[in-house]
Image (cartoon, rainbow, N blue to C red; front, side, top):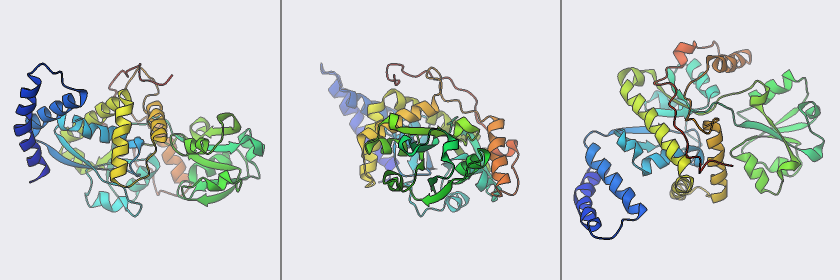
Amino acid sequence: MSRLSRSIFQALVVFPFLLATFGCDRTPSQQEKSEIIKLETDISHAGSLQKIRLLPYWITTAQFAGYYTGIEEGIFRKYRIDLEVIPFQPTMQTNLLIGDKEADFFLLWMVNAIDLKDSGLDIVNIAQLSSRSSLMLVAKKSSGIGTIADMDGKRAAIWSDYTLQPQVLFRRQHVDVEIIPIGSSNNLFLTDGVEIINASWFDEYHTILNCGFNVDELETFFFSDHGLNFLEDGIYCLRSTLEEDPGLCERFVEATLESWKYAFDHPEEAIRIVLEEQRKQKIPANLAHQRWMLDRYRDLYYPDPLSGINTTLPESEYQNIAKILLEAGLIGKIPTFREFYNPVQTMVPEPMDTLNSPQ
């Protein structure tokens, strides 16, 4: 029996039973209410669900909490979408998966998207979720670094595939820094093998704090504060997908925004869902780290706590990133903004639950 057929069967058999049960004096629990909503959704949309595959750019963590929460809570089904998140594998070749249409939608950082576009893949950005880069440089104050100028003559551990931002920053600031390529480990920094390391605010920075450092023992330098705001999470698809089914693209973006809002308004539930998915995939799970990650994603997606995600991509931000890539010789030409960005909607205000917003 297919998943869809099983959902219909469960809806037809279990739903009347639940109704009969709740017709008594007992008040249904929150979990039971959630089951009723999901079954109602299955009954309403079981015959018209579109099977959609989403390709993330990394393993399952709270940085994708909106999608897993939206699936669990039936939000995507409400928009007639049966969503599957493709489990990330380090050996995946994103360009081949996209070109072979193994994924309908994919999440990309803009530098990677522009590179793929230049390589010949006709992809388009249909919604830009983040408006600020999370990437930063971290240094120990004990190393004598308080400004970027103090980095002159020092060593920096930089992810091997993400050297562009720091290289441009060091060149603009006229500092000579030796770049030591690393994978994803912070060990070289923690053991004083280097004085500087790159990190994302929502991930590695928190890991460094958890290794025993206090905030006031570290200096942080966000690339976005130095004219290098390389935007991150955007929703992309092939142009053919947008042209053949623009309604699907719009529904997917709307379902995504609603799912993220639900995750931010119900953080403990969202974290539980992410942890369960991590355990299914045999990924190390840490409650405190996932909570930090979700909180920082709220900050990145909702720069104004009283507004929703602004899915607009400013042309100036795009041109700045593309120009840097061109000057570095990483792309042959800059795709026009109209070729790259095809939004399915503009600003959708979605006030957050301020009771759950960070203080």
